[in-house]
Image (cartoon, rainbow, N blue to C red; front, side, top):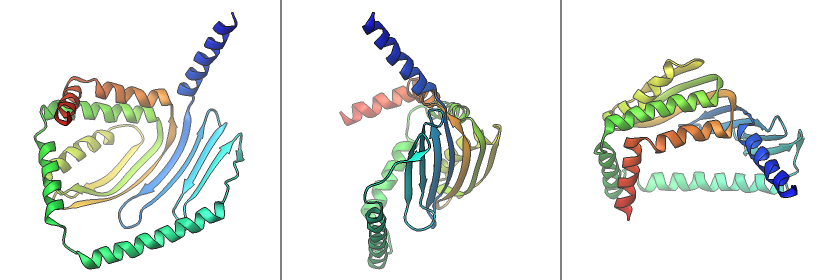
Length: 229
């Protein structure tokens, strides 16, 4: 009987892990000022996670039973991150001064990628399944508040229209405050997100499984795999 009890224990443990709520608070921004701040509590508060890179070097912390785990070489990590950031800034300045115009090869590759997306089979079916996926993900996330503001565009009117067709779905959902504007001519992604709520691993997996096995998306996946093979 002992193996049976062990098996039941592990089954129960998996159920608890998958069903346990993960409480979260997220603030993030893109554009000229990129930042992210995440505060999460999982397994009824047993495990916690904190990340913030708003001011100065990024700060990361993991909590177990409310006690912060000690990080080895934390000071050295902060100094390393600061030096890395300075090197990246110097590299960006040199890159900008050397080539202000985008290379023809990169632009051509990007246009080819956009053309492939536009030529996708059954775009209407894929869009319909994407809208359903967004709704399921939002409900699974169970947000207490969700605020999305800023400006976004892909440099293509059609692709930007697709983006805002999906985002428009959120406007009608509870606790969603959408103030995002579209740029249908230029490529821009300057967005700010604020969200908080509770989600479970099982709840997050379900929308992905439904999307992947929907007929138009599954067909697109198979076409992509055959093309690579």
